[in-house]
Amino acid sequence: MVDAAVTSSSSPFTRKDVLLSMRGMRAGFTTDDGFVRAVDGVSFDVQRGEVLAIVGESGSGKSVTAMSILGLQPTLEIAEGEILWKGTDLLTMSEDDRRAVRGKEIAMIFQDPLTALNPVHTVGRQIGEMARIHEGLDKKQARERAVEMLDLVGIPEPRKRADMYPHEFSGGMRQRAMIAMAITCKPDLLIADEPTTALDVTVQAQVLEVLVDIKDEIDSAIILITHDLGVVAGLANRVLVMYAGRSIEVGTTDEIFYETRHPYTLGLLASLPRLDDAGDEALVPIVGSPPSLIRKPSGCAFHPRCRFARVPGNCQTDDPALRLVAGDAHMAACHYAEELSGVTVESLRSMIDFEAEAARIDDTLPAEPLEPEDESEYEAALRDVAIAEAAAHPGVMDRGVRDRGGRDGSEWPAQPEDPRDGEVAP
Ligand SMILES: Nc1ncnc2c1ncn2[C@@H]1O[C@H](COP(=O)(O)OP(=O)(O)O)[C@@H](O)[C@H]1O
Ligand code: SF4
Ligand SMILES: [Mg+2]
Image (cartoon, rainbow, N blue to C red):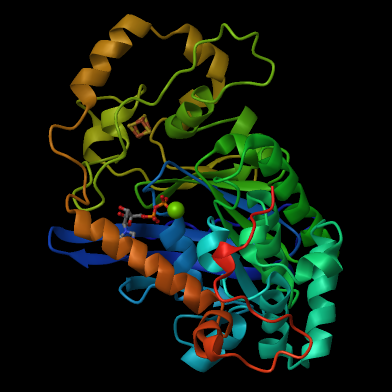
């Protein structure tokens, strides 16, 4: 079953502004335990100027969805679907054409800038390298571009900072440098996968603000991926909530927060501390863990954890399709979405018997460990991420290795023997 296309038809966007359109994507990985259905029928559009947030617990398929756009996972098997970039399917494009789109038109910002930045090159050089590769700038022009980009992301004394190495930057500054690198060629779409998870809350907010300001500056769109629904409020125009590889609710940010129509989304909201809480409001966790993507529960994949499930009943037997439930583009995949219209986070909290809840958690936890069961699978997944990061920054990583013998580097400062021996900036 292919979900209906998830498109916001509301103004000011019109069809011609659609940059990316993922349609009926199904993709996964073959493992010793079986096929991991990581993306299981996901459709959405991204329009110029908007921030689309993709939200869900860890393991719900957010990163795989994002990486499939860039074609960065060599072992990902695409079973069905298309990913239209300005009308052309990225999945059938030649690798050369796709490489040209990657980095220049679509850029990605990763969670951990230390693994994505090359320790042996200055930050400025790595930023400038993107412009050299994609726009053919010479070294001097590339350096100027790097300084301009560092300035744009709010790094003080950008000219001085351009000559520093990644280890001399603080976590927040490194993340800003990653953003600078991603925006160097003024991409139409920025994909930020958990871009601030490693940062403390205040710095998170600053970095996200920079990201959104820049979107306006360079007139692009952003896909912001996060497990924390809390960070998208005030930033995203629309939110797509994923569960077990599916999109289960999509709407404007206001619809998702104030007219929630899926019990899972409501669960995510109820587990968040509220800014106006006096401190005595109990947070309501979603009981249990996300399911194995190899053996998903029957019917609605969320039913073993759902407070509203009718079991026995169709929650256990019928997989709910993503369908229009309110407004002109608010969609949810729940048989009882309409009945949720009166339920708020507050009413959910007030109806919960927390002692019964503790017993329910014991009943709900799966007897078997969740996949991947094997350490080597984690290692393989980490390796894939490293390969993906290298591929997302073509040139920088490859040349970094090739260049270790040293280019002349006229405008660029000499590389230290081992930059990690240098002093670490506060
Ligand atoms: N290279 C891989 N090989 C096998 N399984 C993978 C690989 N990468 C991701 N997965 C699996 O795909 C599912 C979705 O992962 P992911 O998209 O990373 O989740 P999220 O980003 O939402 O936390 C998970 O079950 C994960 O274990
Ligand atoms: S379909 Fe049933 S189990 Fe699934 S979210 Fe809706 S009420 Fe819960
Ligand atoms: Mg992820």
